[in-house]
Length: 103
Image (cartoon, rainbow, N blue to C red; front, side):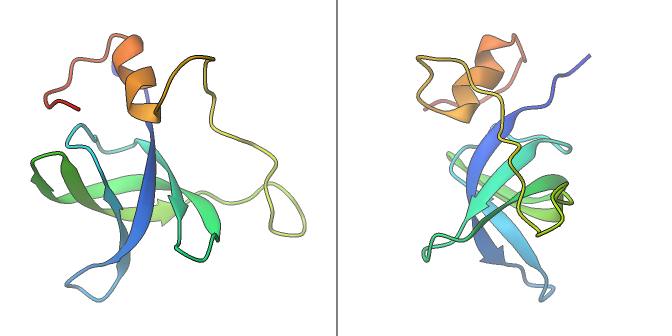
């Protein structure tokens, strides 16, 4: 069984014209959750639906937004994170998920 991992990402326009995400790791799987943040500081949560391209320490993927559970469109839910971890990717590694790639 594979656990869901959490990653930080930025928005990326895909060749199809749809918006996806750019993640600075090659260790991304379909179903992983993302915290996508723009340069302007707007952020939202999304889920990886398709891996479009993977290179050395970078992945481009198609995503779907995770609906907010708050009436005003903002969610107070945050990705789980344990003290002492520098990134969401380390949390995945800590959970014993076998992935390739390096920092």
